Length: 80
Ligand SMILES: [Zn+2]
Image (cartoon, rainbow, N blue to C red):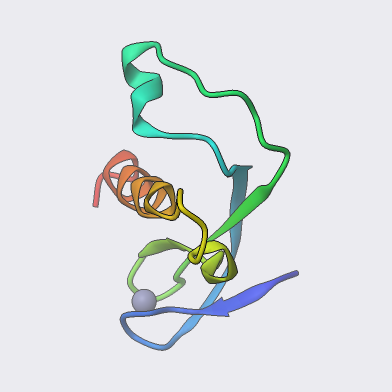
């Protein structure tokens, strides 16, 4: 299992799920982007419950802001 480290409390955060890089909050409005086939893995902290992505290697691309969208959207869905 892929384990990452929580960005908030530095506790282990096991793999929690995976989504396509093109997933965005616009899907709530019925606007879907074509799938890229690039997986974005996200992790959930065992200690504080933070959900975050570990796709920092993709942040240099022009569409890097979508990573943050996924991160924020996941937290709100989790009810945190
Ligand atoms: Zn944490």
